Length: 100
Image (cartoon, rainbow, N blue to C red):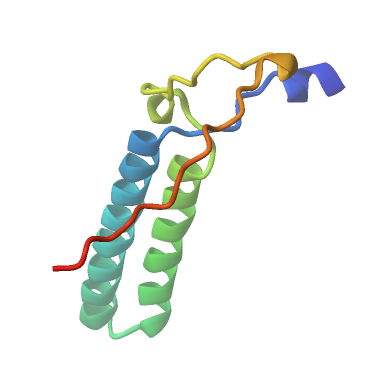
């Protein structure tokens, strides 16, 4: 069982995070407005809460897992350097400021 869970990708790229945030905000906004209107019409505050909480649950299911649509733009990392191939930074001399 451990191999199955280790093979599941858990990362999102930056554009995927932005998309997830927009989806989350859109669903929350629509469910809040819809819940308020429906609760106002029925004069039942509990329906406002039910509609809003349904929106929260839906947005959690759509945005919390790292779905493939959030991993379309992976970062390109530089290749790793060998530990013995590290270069020492060049020594820098302090700059002298000229008097004006």
